[in-house]
Amino acid sequence: MATDYVTGWETWKVKAGCCLIIPDKPKEQSSGGILYPENSKPMDNAAGEVMVMGGPRVLSNGKTVEPEFGVGDRVIFKRWAGEHWKIGEGDYICLVKCDAVEAIVT
Image 1 (cartoon, rainbow, N blue to C red):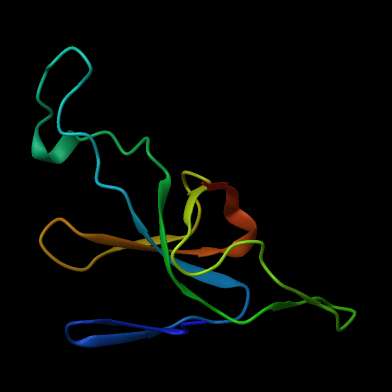
Image 2 (image 1 turned 60 degrees about the horizontal axis):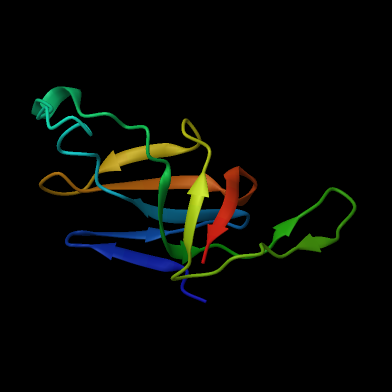
């Protein structure tokens, strides 16, 4: 299980109970063919690929909970969950708690 993600000049270490997701790119145009301007592309897609997993989450009673997904899985997560960072020319990463992942896409 990968716990580090390297982005050019930084290394991201993910804590227990969290995961690092690379979200899908936003749509370039609407279903009717209208092109979206760069600053107003819809961010309605909360899906992406899990790149890094932290360790299992530890509950207050000492038990650990393993997530049902892993590195390389495509997942759907809560739209406003976690933190989003721009890491390059139009590329983003999203750091979310494993609880925010709603589904695994197979």
